[in-house]
Each structure stands twice: as C-alpha cells, then as structure tokens.
Length: 280
Image (cartoon, rainbow, N blue to C red; front, side, top):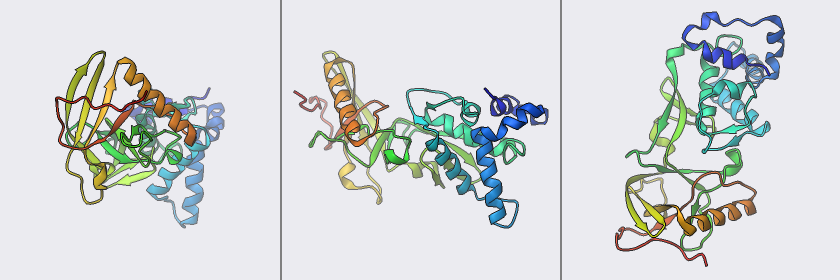
C-alpha cells in the first residue's frame, strides 16, 4: 500500500523533508491525489496558464471519491486525509474528506498546490448556538448518506434535508470548501438552512427524549420546517424509529448512517408532553 499523502501529512511541520524514491514516485499516479493533480494540470492547460479554479479542484475530489465508492459514515470519526488520498480508506466522517482537501491545498508540488501551510485548515460548524442545524441534503450527491428525519404527520422521511450536530469543512482565504457536498460557502453559517436555538430533555421509562427547538427560520428556509425535532436514546421506541428510517431509506436506494430525528413538531414545546409517533 502506497503512503505518499500520509507521509506528507506527517511532515506538515517541515514540508522540505518530503522526498520519495523513484519506485514510490511511480506509484503516485495511482493514488486519488495523483489522479486529481493530473486532472488539474490538464485543466490548467485548458485555461491557458498554470492555474486551476478552486471549484474545479473541489469537484474533482468529490467526483473521484464517488467513483471510488466512498461512503460518508458520520459514526466513523477521524481526520486522516492522507489515507483518503492514498486510497487506503473506503469511508468515514466528513472531516476525513475535508482534511483530504486541506492536504491537497498545502502539499508540495507535484503532489499538491503548495499553498502556505498555515493558510489552510479544517474547521467545524455546530450551528449558531452550538446545538446543531438542518442543511439541504441530496443522498445521491452525498455518497449515499440517507435522510435522518421522519415527519411525524406522515411517518415518512423528510426528504431534501438532514439534521447535523456538526459538520467539518476546509477553510482557505475567505471561503469555506465543503468537499462532502461539493459546495463553497462565504460564511460557515451558509451551510445551515435552520439552526437549533436550544434543546429540552425529558426521560420516560427507558427512553430519553432530546427535543431540539429551532431558531426563527430565515427568508430562505421553508416555514414548515420550523418547530422542534426529537432525538431519542434507549428503549424500544428508539429501535423502532431507527428501523423505520433504515427501511424508508433502503426503498430510495440509500443508507441510514446517522441517528434519527422525528420532526418538526409545532412550537411551543410542552414539557408535560412526550413527543413520539405511534409505530405499532
């Protein structure tokens, strides 16, 4: 297994020490990073110069990962972007891919774009109140990551959206690059369609209910998304909602790889009520 990008990553503090023998160099085009850099050089020729646009590089990483069967798995934490570019991993949380783009940006030529190492980093967004947020979501464009919200009225998936406790992207210059979604944001908050304002906690029997109450929706957010979304932990009810979401996603050709939320329930939140749907 070649470890070109993992080696560069380990030597980030002194990139002048990055050196590979001829045998290793010959294997570089077979890596994901090598394929992206080769494609970027071709595109630079198209532009008539020695540059490639940032959104093109973002798109190459996203599309090449999709072609290689990358699975977005939020339950698999890590930040080894080098392993992603070396094709040593097949899936993981969002930070893996964000770290891979970060590494491509600062890696020395010809392995990367040799931007100043300190000018690029991965950053996390947890919502305006650090309590989570809703984003627009299309599983077909997000490595098959299925929907995780069940509509309490219809008991079907709330398609087009995903609930996130947090999300990692790559920061460079004045922009934030999201290689998992193939998007560029001017502000971190641009990734959020609707933020959580606060949460409410209640325990009933074996099940804990965490109700995430949203902030007032902005002008770009459908008003019907406003309310609160309930995540449960423990008990038979949690298992049933999880299985329902698994089944509904499978019918669409996607995989549930996160916890499940039920919502939106209408405001205001009432601490005397237990917000659950009938699954019997």
